[in-house]
Image (cartoon, rainbow, N blue to C red; front, side, top):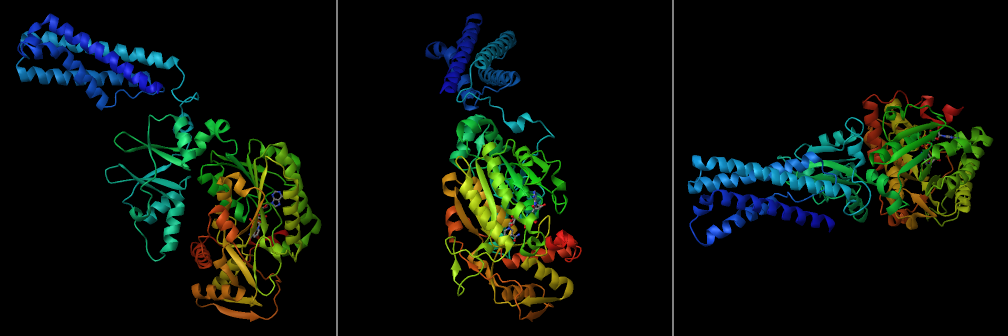
Length: 600
Ligand SMILES: NC(=O)c1ccc[n+]([C@@H]2O[C@H](COP(=O)([O-])OP(=O)(O)OC[C@H]3O[C@@H](n4cnc5c(N)ncnc54)[C@H](O)[C@@H]3O)[C@@H](O)[C@H]2O)c1
């Protein structure tokens, strides 16, 4: 509203200035008006020129002011005014034959006066506006991404939509963001595409590399530069946007604003529950190393606390990422937790000794890390006023299905290992001790598969595939046991969806994390590996060494988060095959790939 008043004010000042100039001109050289003949036209001529000039300036958006406009920009406006005035006078003069030598001096004088009048009025307006608070919100309208300066902050991608989808996917993979803004052949905004859109399109139609124009989001909202940062923030929250492309008046992309940038400016006023910095405890592990990258790509700042049981290689390449921090420490140590939690509003707890055999090596350490540390963690969260805590538990807490029935979150629990026992106790401890404002969400993960920056070949799908590739033979122990499976990227997507969900929908929820269509018997997993690695011999051994046998229902997570697993077991098998063919794996038997062997 205020801004509109300034626009009217500037238009009125311009009109008055032009009026004074044209009246002056008519007074000095009455012949200029006289050439239009006597009567009405001669009378309205001095009003007509200023009216036309102001209308043209309005059409060319010269009355759209922003508080952050620089002095030079105001002068730029003044020059536009002068250019328009010049063109108009030249057209009038040539039309009427008034451009004769006797009039040239007057026209020159007119131009100089126009310049002075327009420049002075614009500078006055600028000085006036500069003293006033912002038009809509009181915060400074300076985006963090602009303030950081070139070279300090990565810039989201802008790519032509005519490029092949695979090329755009590669560019997104190599960028710190999980999306790109797309343009048409003339460089105008055409739409947006996210990593998830490409993956989903691929899953829906695996055989075809669909053109990006078929899968991009053509209706992604955009904004113009003159919208204040406060308004942009409001719009992004209301419309649930993580990023917002800013386009020129003509519609060419200028830059992209990230919700996380604006959150940093406005968070306290607008949504105290919204996440900004996330701590991933155990972030250097198999799931953690994928999660940290995913969260960074979604624009979060991410801290990691990890004791580096398996080294730091999985995170090394993130060292120079401006939004990433690493703390080497132990989840059992409250001081380490408090240090890593400074400035954090969400904690993802992944740190554990993972897997039944690894937990059997040292019961005391397993109980301390997998259970006792969880209690300390709640105290640290309370002290640091953390808003959300997400915990990775396991479907192993169900132990075994009776008669193969589907197990839901309310089914009886029957942990058959120390690992599962400590996870179950941790669930109870976290839910029992957490108090508002801390919201706790517990995930019971299916067995995870897929490649990672810290690969594991002690997980059933991964190990069967690796053995088929390297040994040409796999052994299936028992084979009739049911096991739910989920891809590592889907796990990470579910955690991110929880962080972004309204707190009341996820607080104190226990969610099985996986997909009903990915419940398989172990023998079926072997068959799927053989389909992808055809020369594989399958050896069936009667005795089942692993007693876990459960089919799990995942309706609750799909309804609560509107989330669905997107990667199938066969995709995961192919992913491992690709990793081998690209030389990313040495030998599945290396102890770095196995929690048990590494800790022995
Ligand atoms: N991978 C699966 O199939 C699966 C299934 C169900 C649940 N989970 C749960 O998911 C979580 C992550 O599993 P993952 O497969 O990534 O395991 P992982 O072993 O690859 O990673 C665990 C990480 O925790 C760190 N860590 C261990 N003890 C620590 C301590 N005291 N302090 C700080 N860091 C410590 C390790 O260094 C490692 O980086 C675990 O809690 C696990 O129980 C995993």
